[in-house]
Image 1 (cartoon, rainbow, N blue to C red):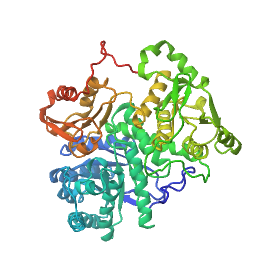
Image 2: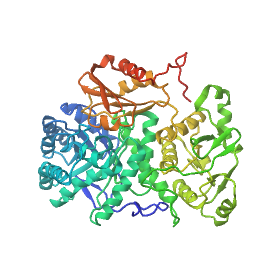
Image 3: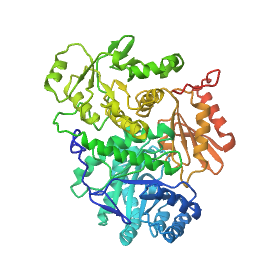
Image 4: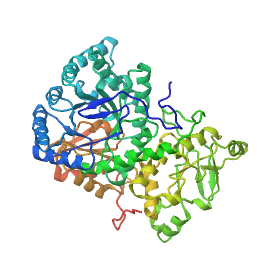
Length: 590
């Protein structure tokens, strides 16, 4: 299989054709563009205009608005007129699910239409069915018949299309042939791309979104290889995003891992950070990710070492288990959390209260061989060691940590466990959002590559925040679960309840359930699919009514919203996943 990027060590942005969305160019030599989505009812013209202007004010370059019905799609005309009246020409994207006729209407007024291949022409009933080749081809013919009118109007108006595949909404047809997999996501998108190209339409780009960073990363890598295999003129831009990332620090970390892992390898031409918060808060996070790329380019270097891992299929690097005092590291052990002596000293009065969140080793007291992965003599010394030892990239090197650690893993024997660092220049780190982005990308990208047996975060000045950030990165990467895991979608005009307040209420009642995964979905567009690996789901079924899921199976219907959180707790109890919160009601937060 071809490589998905020019080099896993030296940064080089993937060269694509340009796709114009209004006056904004995506791909080619254009900068990475920042997008977001308004959250109000599309029929509320005044609110839609205000939220769009608020986004533009903070640096959003392309604004997406949902169009769940033809009526909503028609109102995009009013929204565009009101924006033009105040001198705002930001490109508008119509977000379409289930309704091809809404897409046709929206295409008359906007600069881009986003369609989801999983539900634009297909139906999703989680039906299991074997398709013969003739039956499969017949379904493809029906998709072409449904999609062609939209392509033709986009050709006529010279507007763009995003073929936006979501892991959570693959069609039954794709699921039955490819499974709920990154391969299925790629093929689902390519079916629509082939139709567009058949009609000589090329103003489109792709996205491969998932709430699981590992799935998302693998899907984009596979897509890039598939496009290169199709031919040099399949060089379409990529839109990046982690869907249903959640809120707060967790949402920012998960987004940074998924989006940042791809950006650092040169993939991605436009991004949207999806937070369960007011959408204006998404733009600074996106900007911080784009700013990180300047640092990434400075830390590049050339190397021809073969990667130690398969970038298209997650497998944890196989190492030997070693003991440092009472702590075991490597092999099947979860990644361990190291802290600096300074952090350990600051936290010492609270160690007994931290429980599962306590640091496990102190960096300065832990035997670690620190090496320059380019230094042949230092690598040879590790090869000659018969017993496994902890290894890390040496501080002070002017290298990108992901590239350097990849090279380290490629050159040393697999028996040696590796410590992942967030920075090689801890004294120069500034913490804050930029520090969170750096730590999440550096450590999270490597964990998603299967590299890493312990982690060390030093770039956050506050001791408690430093420790919390390390644990939260492990949780977001799916490498070590120490608390309740939440999958929460960002709000939009389809949302049937207040996502922010509801998410807060659910967290307040369930955040002590270690290892339980709860999905909070505003509607059914991606709900059942994105909840495939969640234990329980809370999904808007109708205005004021909630459906509850176990996995992706709905089990309780039309529950009044006022009762739904308590009914969710009852459902968790019914399935044996409930434990009572600590007697004082407190959950330790570092």
